[in-house]
Image 1 (cartoon, rainbow, N blue to C red):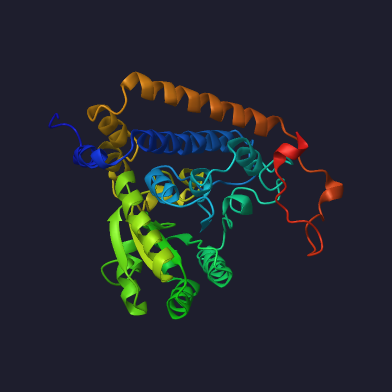
Image 2 (image 1 turned 135 degrees about the vertical axis):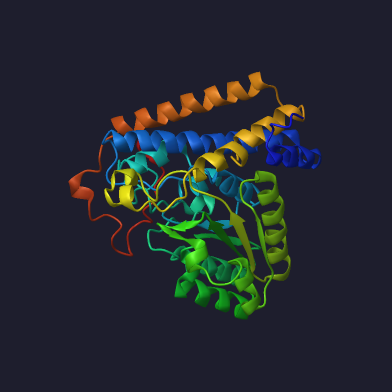
Length: 356
């Protein structure tokens, strides 16, 4: 391979021999799907088609895809305010997701959840959550119910480096260790809690080291390498399923965009930028999860450039259609605003297909 090829590409190519080609292409498809979905969401947000800001997952695609493909269909996940990637990787309908972000009646949760609160119990998606760290105890609760029911499910709780300092995260890790819960705590360390660097706010050498205090295994890995994420999360999930004890996996990654869409318009950032110059460009050049994986797929003979271009075009069409569906869909009628507020009513996720 050329000396100009990123080291990550060479590493990925060397790892591919142990993987089924169909799985490798599915990884590429899902990562590209997340990236195009987020680009379109950003475009719609800038155009005023979405209510409020969106928290984009650009740059972290390998974590969601590697982790969710390592799970069984019945396994559960809990997500964060930056959860589009996790929900897509777990298999949620793209049209319904885009419509949900737009607050439309045909959205995943009938427009009630929006960008930061998407749920689909049928896929094991226990929900995104705008409260930092709040999905961690939710997933532990799901793991507890799984243990009590004996249904062999494992929970994976996504959280960030900022959430690693929340009391509820530590309390849940302690409880999971005491009760031997089949849960994997997955930290997406993307370098910043809003604008606070992790090296400033996270004590110790890593988030993963904190698991030692609770007596369960942990590991820090390259979150830009989808194959490494898949392998390590699979090991953690299988271990938790076998011995019903928690694990912690810390994925080192980076978000390419601001904390939320529109951050760049904040006047104070001009005088007090929190990212080093060139940081994002350097990661894109040498550690981008999609471009390095694409290069490795071609170099390993798994797929041609033409085949990958076809996949890209299929995804672009799919995302454009989802955006059109979201924009053209109707808002929930005002007279149904109180639906699903009380416990004796149906669970709020009714598949949008029922209403088409």
